[in-house]
Every structure is written in C-alpha cells, then in structure tokens.
Length: 102
Image 1: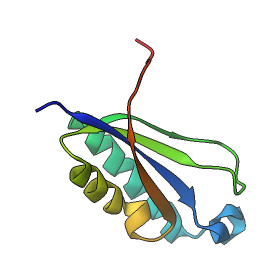
Image 2 (image 1 turned 90 degrees about the horizontal axis):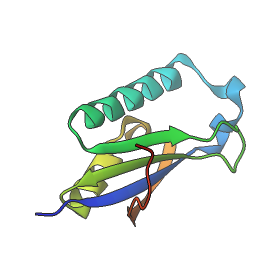
Image 3 (image 1 turned 60 degrees about the vertical axis):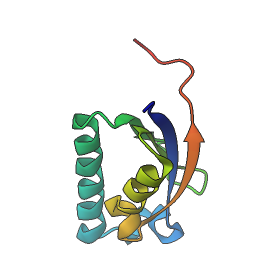
Image 4 (image 1 turned 120 degrees about the vertical axis):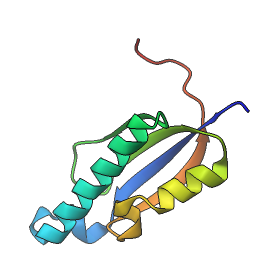
C-alpha cells in the first residue's frame, strides 16, 4: 500500500501566547510533545516538524507525516500530548511534499 502524507497545524491556546502564563506543567507537556515527535521520526513516520518563532496569534507549528491512512494521521494528531492536554489546537490536512532538501 502506498503511503500518504499529512500535515497537521498546531496553534497554542490564546492564554499561552503570553509567556508569563506558562507553568512547569506546560513545559512538561511540550517536552512530551517533542519526545512523541522524536518517536515518530524513529518509526519513519515523521517527515519534519517545526514552528514559527513568533509568540503572537499568527504563530503556528507544523508536523508532516507519511502514513498508511488518514485515520492513523488523525489518531496520531489527537494523541499528540500538546493536543491531548489542551495546550494546542490542531487541524489535519492531506498534504504532499513536492520538494525537499537532500
């Protein structure tokens, strides 16, 4: 079966755009989020992940995955610790990487 690509966009909840609202709890969730993405990379499912560096409403992160199905992509997105713990909202899109650095 040919694998499909998906992108999910992440946006911090508005209260966390103010860095003074962050606690150890949010930092721990972001660490778990990063570790989950590292595991997807090890499993060969993650193409790339990153974020914009601005802390305002236009900022966002993206995760690009290569998977068997949209259902798998949705499950992984919903189980991302940042999404599951409610500090980020996520939206899933079918995606296709057209060009990538070697």
